[in-house]
Length: 431
Image (tube, rainbow, N blue to C red; front, side, top):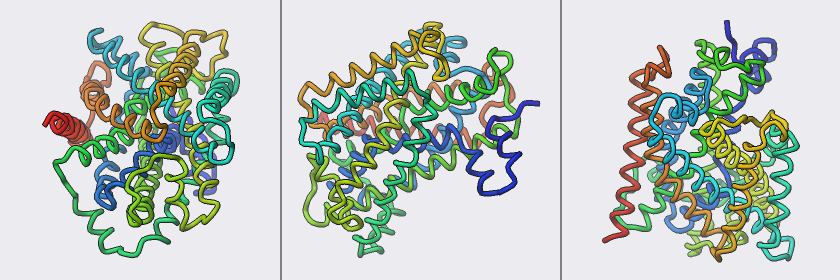
């Protein structure tokens, strides 16, 4: 009988809290990396420009994110393959290639803007041009990814992302009208104007993100390979216990992500928007949202949070592109592989990082770029999500583990909402 890697460790641990923490894996890492600099930038801009108007999106996206990421993880666990591998083996190339190309474009832009955001945050303290800083940051990330252990990155920077909880404290210190906050949280504000709809698409794109779909499935496969299941036949199938562990792992990760996301919007709304600062053009301005809790150290706290979330997210972005390309073209892949054994996989990671860095030289402001990256993700996500829903209901791929009615209801609702938001945004561009 198969047991999930985390489940095995959890069973041996007698302390219930330690057992719960040990049981967390790809889902928690996915949740932490979802609060990447692109996310923090988008949420800060949403709060600054629109006040409390987008707070309700946290309640809407939480169940969508939980179900979508669980489905992606389940596909990896049951099929023994990543998403690109499933599309390659069971579907036409005309489905596979657009999905992978869309993912690579979105991920490369996202990785580049996240690296620039780390540089912009460091620039507050290091008076060196942002474009000079992007190169050493990119080199460090690639070196650790290729020659170090991704576990090292995760374990180190997962703790740094906890600094993002400073937004929770800042929001509590700066917010006075809790009645208005509660109202904005439970009653959706819907406006049919381009600025509002573009912000909505950016929020959806940075929470229900394309790169996380591919990453989650591939990481579940990595977990099994790490346990010694090198052959596809050994990885196929999943027990009830494995799926239950993966589900709780995913719920924990998405809850972590959404708590941070909600309070970043609230902190920015209660500080920046409340004082008439409705547009953010620099990292220093974005850091001001933390002033109620950190005072003069706000910039330092912001910088630590951006470094932590950026160093966690960039490898996830470039690795998920690497997984997709390697599975599509039949290359050996995996972050546990030595560089010599998976040259093409690491080559894609390196190239994606380099191209991402070069995008920063076309003259876009790093903070503005974060927002538009989220918008691009919001447009790429709906067709990919439709594919994922079709895959997860395909008995040839999933056997008896196809989605139940509840999972399908939430998954297709997520797909419809993303299509509607992107469509409405594009319609208001034209009008």
